[in-house]
Image (cartoon, rainbow, N blue to C red):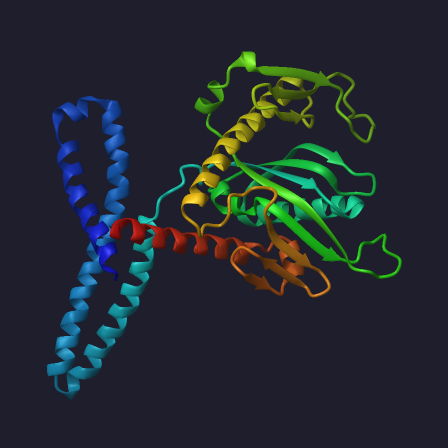
Length: 364
């Protein structure tokens, strides 16, 4: 294990002792707010400290087995070697766990998310591709046991979407999907192409963490313009006959959110407000990310919609993520929601970059 990791882990062990002392004090126990803060920190620190203690124990076991191997007779050699192999395997696993535990945590990773998909260059084919992406992500949500619900849509005439907003609820949704933000390019023969030529079109995806209610309260109602209108739809007995659709504009930033899928104006207003808050939150996040990226390179982009992050090449059955040079020849499976390899590769890359930045920061 690298020295800088040992240095960090030793600090966790020291901090655990401090927290246990603080939590035993009567004045802390009477201050419920401070007690809860320290209790949460204790839970996190003790998890790291316990894994570090196990790592140290297995290092001692390894050293003892190596000494035994050097001095043992033939009857003990096999037992010593088995212990060495077992200790090395567990130490490798524990080191990986400890590295991940030390990485800076994004407080939004555990949140639900809004996913916005918009057709870009490519006309009708781009709208069809937006529909394919929406289906791909919905299928992925089903695999993960998440709930995906369309809250706003603008269908195109030939199918697909000019724009669609999906609300996704579940465990660690934003942490898994945040790297999907950016430009997605498709290369394939459109259904409307009569001469078999491959066309290139594009869509943009934005993934926004759902802010908590405290963030929503911070928006000044005087800065909002709320418009109602009749929802669009295909008609039939369920078409809205009242102005239940809601559009909210945040005047200082010009950011707009709307919702028309619910049956009631009140429900649509509440949902649109959540989307608006998420977009304002994401604007602030993007500005901070751009500033950080200018100061330190290597992270997976800023999530800006102008970034071309991925190409879906149907003739070759190939998906390429340009940020990490990942190429997979299983495009049809991916389009059916089999995104685990992509998501995990992006998370692993980000973790490696964070670990490298952590090492540089400690060494500075």
